Length: 627
Image: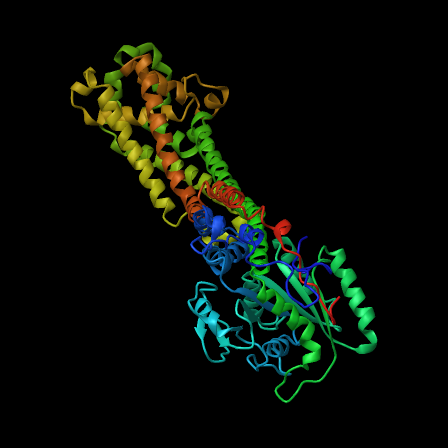
């Protein structure tokens, strides 16, 4: 049996109207945890659950969904909804299972909720009228003996308590009504289909804090979509529901009631008791005639009088809400995983683009393209004339002196060569950086999460990139000269303290870096460089020997690529810093699943799951005016 008061045997009553089950009987005491006077009224259900729920709340609060994915907004709303339910209902209700039963009266605009509440408590406690929305802030009505529990603010702690009517949806007006039996309270909620967004949101929040939903609809609006969406939510939560079909014309009573009952059964809500209120007049105080409300009022009176029934309602709704947490939190965890996956995908696009840029630079150092044009011309001027290259191999023993003599009096070609090398490298770096930025920008723009993170300047390298590229090349050139000094410290030409010889050799090493790694000129290099790679190789080999040449070029090339990698990494950070800021915690999804699993385990240990629907006492038998 899923709902209180399911069929005619619900909370069976004697012919004198007394409950057939004694609320103080051992069966009820065992079921509700309200036996001996000294026993904890919270019973076994409190064991471990509050701590597990508190940990779950922390995990939900830590989950973030900043990336603009299709699931993000729904996940944020779900997280807020779960947090609100934990704060508004689950945690305070677990702390006090014996607190008064809260009946939230919800329904469509103009359904007559406020009039019904006023009539049930026999006092005009909630404003009713023809203007919509009428109920701008919720009104909670309880017996004076129960007001302390609701005034403390443990239930719905986010609402400010007030004794006066208010138009502020963030307030909760508390009203006492002696005619309402102790142990039972009504909360008149805003319209679920209100034109005011805040009212609709508050109505949903209040319904989630209910022990029992009293759902009010009319003969004209019982098939509307919005109420049924909330009824589906109630079914998923396992909350106890009672239905009121209001303002039914006498001639249509049987037909409309039968149709609504059929719809309820089709949606798995056939056990919910249905009370049919005929279309009628109100008295001078705006209250319905007693004969109209007596069936529903009597039903609530019997519920208020049976502590066992109230406890069973609380436990069923509480257990249903706890059971519904697990799939909801798993969905939240999946959304958190999507956030992490999306951040990884965006990072992968950045990495691919800038690693491609690094490979382009490396390939440019290998395929001889940097030996073309200005660098080639300046290298030829620097080393010597064509006659020098033709006779170089025959007079290799005198190369060191020839090199010094050739360059000592010609500082200008060295400067021009160094500038040409710098210009060629900077041009290459600017080109690959521009291509990487454009590729990353395009890749992110095609991704929903990436598009939201983009700004136009990201489509191009950073404004200071040219300066940083030039500084990189100059620093690398100085590093090559230091490398020459270090590697050739014991060589005779360096020992002669000819600084310009070091500079000349350093420039030759830079040229060698632009050629193939093993100094084996390819056809492209020979054709492009007109033999200058061979010449550069011969010059260096004559000074340092073959192995030294290879070592120098490899180290200089490695140093340059490391600097380029650092430069491009800094460019990639312009994108990566955005995903780093938006990225959820790496284990957010797993943390949510683990927290939900602990709640589920604690729920089963507590006995609530076993005390759910099967433990409900016989439900209340609806009398006249109800089906």
